[in-house]
Image (cartoon, rainbow, N blue to C red; front, side, top):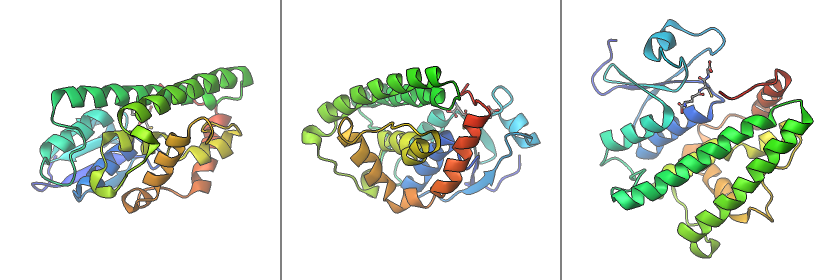
Length: 231
Ligand SMILES: N[C@@H](CCC(=O)N[C@@H](CS)C(=O)NCC(=O)O)C(=O)O
């Protein structure tokens, strides 16, 4: 693929939490990029060729090379531009391992939310219980390890991969709740999570790539109608 030296392009889908991770990583580090919206129903030749195994977005193109899988891309971005913007993952191996553990845990919760988009109320109830239970574990873990005393201290200059995971997975939780009519985050049970997501949502780097809530609600209702399953 012919691409000018240094150019960065993200191929994505507007509603994808995985694509949002990559867009946020680039924006937080201040790396300019082009964005190409992919049609996931009728996949482009580009998508089939750049990600032949999974045929999914996001795909990052850098200097004509393809990088796939959102978390691999986020780490690639952090390592390729170590001196641009904040570090998304700590350099210290122990700290890095600790952060990666929680990244994987948030990923699991995101996967669990897949069960919420069903018309089968039993499955939805089961999914909701799993999600809520894990959110409490996350709440306690974050409070203990990263936000002692429950104080949130967040600014665009200090954002890291955990903020990216939180806001890409749950930044649209109000749209989720409106679309499927269930309460996912409870300010009583998850005060830190709610405050964290709302604080990061207010930053301009996030707002710039956040679609309007009603567009999201409509899309999520459509996923429910077709009994969508995350794979
Ligand atoms: N593990 C992948 C998941 C990416 C993913 O599931 N992308 C969805 C959009 S949200 C997709 O491209 N789906 C198309 C399909 O499944 O055919 C990542 O982290 O990048």
